[in-house]
Image (cartoon, rainbow, N blue to C red; front, side, top):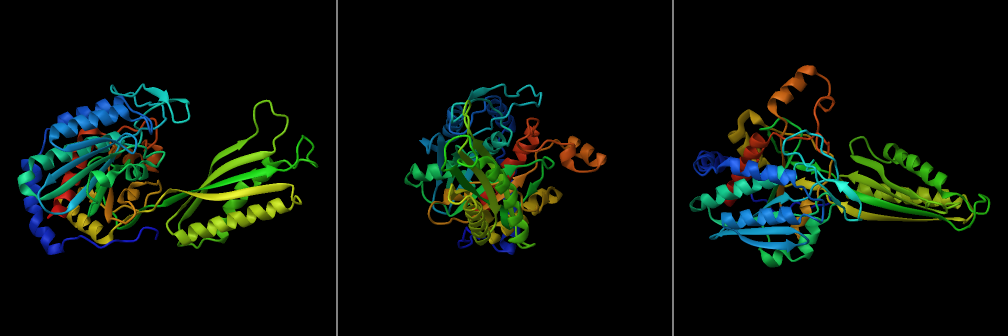
Length: 435
């Protein structure tokens, strides 16, 4: 795996079971008014901002963090916000949420639905929607921080609240590191994050090992060295490039074993210019998702060899440049930390806890550890209104046939239950690892 597993910080099973009743009491006794954070969620949902332009969202977050009592630094790695809650000696725990939204036109019909449009990083006017649940993550983390601050007499240590910009693009985690994150606050002992999915609201899911795959871009430029519309003088690169996209799919069946994970898709294809009489260059970008760097490298090497061989057919008149660019590392939960949370969440949430399979999006959360790996746990929250979920189950078939999931224009988490569950999960996990 790409991300080495650092030394564990888990509690023994007996220790966990002895402490959990007391920790549950803390959650109950210091529980904040969730209505305020639901209102915050709706405000942020109604005013989403694209990656690299999260200024209003960052301002809202910073104001609430100051009101809770954290030391706040803004504009870290762009619009990143860092809150530090020091409360005596002990471990340092990093908690993370994301600020950015997606270029999607919302179609939920909610009274607080987004009608926002804004220019993206390349200047295109885009609709904007929180279609991935980052607004839920923000509200849940803020609520958990309010609980932890109120319960300060019950724990000792330091809590770092990281509100990361530009996760969707991605690159915000690295930008925060490069922007001096750990000049502002100490390097954490443990990192924690959570993400909503389409499962039933109120559910919490933790798995050990790989949670999300790694992602790398393969950038390929194919150029004809000729000029003019005559194919014998200027070999046409569009047909070759189109063929290569389908040819590359064979790599997954001939080079990858049945027990290994890998996907390969084309994300961008550009050829020609308006008004041009001929095309002599194609630029395309493909994405590889893997869980093992050895598999990624094997796919990349095979793609380079195939591209070179196909260009050679044209007798030197077709040239290619093939490069690989890291997009996001594997999200790999520390086994002992994840097992600790599995036991703790199972105890606290009962039948609302489950162990999920590996999911297929990608994340840059692991990059927040900086140059030296920090052990972490990344878990999933359900978000679909329970009644809607139960109705979809009665209909049978795939749940995707009946319910919207992340990045859908109809994605609409159940606010109160999802935020409340996220608050409890994040606060409980923090308290466990601060013991």
